[in-house]
Length: 284
Image 1: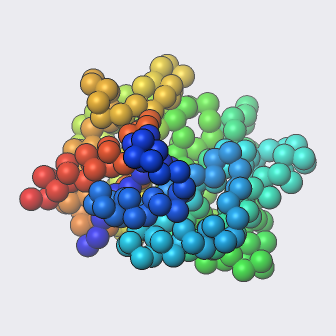
Image 2 (image 1 turned 45 degrees about the vertical axis):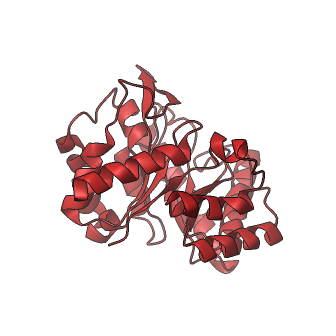
């Protein structure tokens, strides 16, 4: 059973240490004792093939599992044809980059707002996602998994049930469960271990045990308002949830082998180490 911990993007301390290139991240993370890295393409996929392949080689050399966070501009449910065309490009560009660097999964936000009819919006998103996966298959990216992420605001499409429904459409679609987002969207919902267990139980009910075992997780403390997520925080910000200890206990109890990506603001790697230590303390 191998559990992976790592950051989303590069910590402030990485640059403070004098590093400038993400090509140095795998070695830096390995020295820290981390073994996962989510490369950020949230403002567009700008990485060149040569660089992506070098990153993949460095990650393999240092035992770092790679994933990609696709552009925020992906909007599967849009009715605007121009945005639909751009969504296709962002989506396929992300899969292409993942193939170059041998990243196992591309995480993405499903769309923008949920609209007046959430069910219709979800149907449009699902239909377009399936269409894009067929194109990806034809272009040779069919083995890259894609992961719609649970979102942090109730007004956004991407609550737990909606993400799980998208995942039933194709075996290449897996959930990216952002527990900080679930906590914020539920106005502080994840306050006990039982609440975490309910989330994991629901994933298992819909997608099966293997989906839970190999879950792709985002985690960080988070600030929220009545409208949901305000901003990601760090473990140094006292009094904010969710508490990783509850999830760590469930990971141990269920024999899970997840990838835990930390999205703490500026302290992604440091807090990933905090989460790893919490898990090790729980696991004994």
